[in-house]
Structures are given as C-alpha cells and as structure tokens.
Image 1 (cartoon, rainbow, N blue to C red):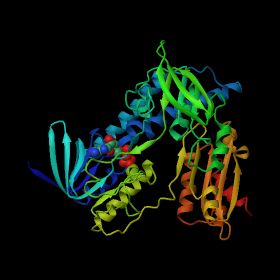
Image 2 (image 1 turned 120 degrees about the vertical axis):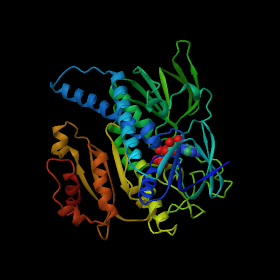
Image 3 (image 1 turned 180 degrees about the vertical axis):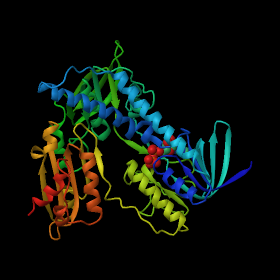
Image 4 (image 1 turned 30 degrees about the vertical axis):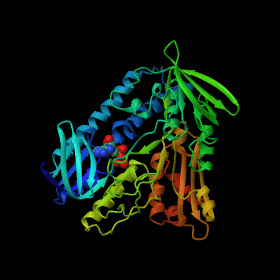
Length: 462
Ligand code: ADP
C-alpha cells in the first residue's frame, strides 16, 4: 500500500479542525482533513447550532407576532412547519456551498470523506468507500467532536434525537401536537421552548431537581419563570422505558419518587447529553482518554507533542466557537514547531442557552465565586427599564455583572432575556481583557440598544 504524506491531518472537519487546516494550508503546509460527512463544519452545521437556530429564530418571530397581536397589532398567525424546516435546510445548503467555495479556493488542502484511525502516532489510516488510504503525518489534530448520547433505556430507539430533528431533510415532517422531551439540559430546554412557541404542547422530564444542570443555579432561577408557562416541567423523574402505542404515538414510562407513571405524546425527544467521539487507535497509541474526552491543557497538546485535540472531543468547553479558538491555538503551536506559544482561555467563553427567552453567561458567576471564596460586587440592569425591550414588548430579565469586590475588575456576567446571546460577547470581551466597572461605566454604549444596559449595570455600583 502506498503511504501518502501530510504535514497536517485533521480527524474531523468541524470547528476544531478547519480553522487550523486553513491556516496551515495558507502557510504552505500540505493538509488533509478527514470527515465521514465529506463536508466541512462538523455537527454544528449538520445538526447543531445553525439548524437549531434557524428553527429558533422563526419560532421567536411567531412568539413576537403573538405578543403584538395581543396588543391589537398585525394579524393572523399560521405556523407552517414544512416551510420552517425548508428555511432551515436552505440555510444549511447555503453554508455548505460557502464552505465548498472556501475549500476550492485554497491550495494545499483536501477533504477526504472517510473515517480516520491511528495506526501509530505518525500514521493514520482512512477508511473510505473506495477502501483504505494511509497517511504519514507530521502533525495530527484530533477534532472528532461529540455525538448524541442515547442511554440504555428500553425503547430509546423510538425517540428522536437532536440529530434527527435538525439534520438536513430532518425526520420530523409535521408539527407534533404533543412532544415529550427527556432531558432538561440546554438542547432539551431550547427545543422545548421552540416547539411550545410553534404551538406544540410540550412536557419536559428532567432527572435532577434543577434544569440546566451544572450551570449557575442563580441564573437558572431567573430564566425558569420566564419560559413559556404552557411547557409542563417535571423534575426528579427517571425514565424507565419508551414504547409505541397502538395508535403509533409514544408512551414514556417513568418513576417519580416511589410512583410509577406514564405519559403519552406524538414524539419523544431524547436529549440527555453528548459524548466525545474518540477515534479508533487513540488509546492504543498512548493518548490519554478520560470520561470527558481526550486530555489536553491550554496548549491543546496530547501526550504526543505533535498530536493535538481540539473542540468537543477534549470536553473542556464543548461549543463551536471554543473549538475554533482552540484550533487556532493548535495551528500557532504547530507553526511554532510544537513548542507551545499560544494558549486557550477556557474561562472566558460565552455560553448561551438559546431558549425563548435566552440566557447567557461568561466567566466567573456567583456559584463559582462562592465555591472559590472570591468576594463579588454585582452590577444590575433590569430590562423593564430598557427602551429596546419596551419597544419589542420583551421586558423580562436583565443583565448582571460580577466584579472582584476589591478591584472592581469584571470577572463575569450573565444576561437573561433580550439579546442575551449578543450582549454576552461584549461582556466576555471586557472580562477577558481585564476591564473594570470604571471602564465600562465610561463607555458610551449605543442608545436605544440593549447594550447600553452593560454601562448602566456598571454604573449601578457608583
Ligand atoms: P468540533 O466542533 O469539536 O470540531 P463537531 O462535532 O462539530 O466537533 O465535528 C466533528 C466531526 O468529526 C464530525 O463531522 C464527525 O463526523 C467527525 N468525525 C468523528 N469521528 C471521526 C473519525 N474517526 N474520522 C474522521 N472524522 C470523524
């Protein structure tokens, strides 16, 4: 078998892979990306952030229209689910075209449809539809991402997953009347709010006592009462089985304390988490793999200095934009001869829960500060007084900024409600660059936009 050579081979072609692939290709290195989809952008575009937000934004328009209609403003609202899904598909197709054009315009880089596995630390086999190919690689980036975790519950195969719901030409063709969501993490909760806004009756079953397990309970407590009250949320529930009813619907069996109960729906979404995808052969060549994923530090290097692990596969911050930054760090360290010169900041990564309304946070928030004994001063701004929120009839929630009590340096913040996903970027930039409440208070944020609330939250301290 002929063995080809690559300066860099990426396992996966998602956010953890392609930024580095392009940077190195542009620097004259020969680059091979491998992905079973034969497409660039990984799960983010295929079944994650992009398609789910295409559905979210249309659902939010229906929700806003309904609010305005309550005040006698424009008209009839009919939800056309097929058109929403066609919109989602068209966004995916458009972005795939964009990526294909980028790829075609860049020399030194090829994308192979296949699955990669390690033979030795410097040799990777790629299984393709036409057989196996072998590469000798100076550097490898493991960016194989994560996959939906389906628990071993009997009948789990009768549930949809986020993959089925958001992939191109998704499985669900009509808007269900009743949906049961298993899992109160961000994917389950987001989807519950989208479908509720479109008119589906949603019941969400959460195993633990808190929704959005692992996130700051203070933020979750602000968000929960703002969610569509039609969503029935049952916590402390353990799903034991799922079955198909004689009418073709779904019946979920669960225990709630000492009680056994069942719940019927038209569809069930299983959303209990994601798991890192570890390429075959990784453990055999000595890569350290924990329950969270491939172990790496801020330099993204594995135990082999020429093998990096970026993105969801390392379990550090499983978000697309975190993967992109990590990929760039790996590229810089590769260009520096595998001697670390750039480091990922795992703390200042904005995270948004794109529920309707959304919640977003960054940096150190009160629960973490308390655990670490860091005294905070909190600056607050309420959207009740915000002009843009008033114009849009969306005055719920607000901004909270968390400053170090002594220096008033911004350590973190959260936003619940309007524009949360955008505002958190500005707060994250300020926190990552060590700005203080004085700096934020002196900045003339734009009126009448929700961002002026950031300066006002800082000024609330003085
Ligand atoms: P990230 O954003 O962390 O890069 P994604 O999950 O978006 O992660 O993308 C990872 C991509 O890697 C997915 O498209 C997945 O199909 C692909 N992948 C997973 N395992 C392999 C493998 N063994 N060889 C090649 N590609 C893989």
